[in-house]
Length: 127
Image (cartoon, rainbow, N blue to C red):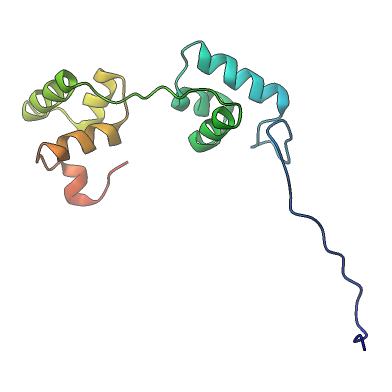
């Protein structure tokens, strides 16, 4: 016997795809196409994030859903050597990142791999 109570409805799982937008913070189809075009033209994920006002992870998901190969912006061994020298000369990880056109976190990680502790590591203020 079924219990009496309020009627409920069960909705199927949300099967959203890139091209729908539930809010101003999620890219619609046109915006997703522009993200892809700009990325393929050389704009970075971080630049696209700022440009479209969306999280960098959202940009990456758009690219992944459309099978767009991701560029990796890691540092070469020579760039890591340069980062070490710059850090030893008093440059901040933010300054090094800007100089090498990468992220501060990438610089911090590469320096840590070389056994160098940064101020951000010591204070927990890492990006």
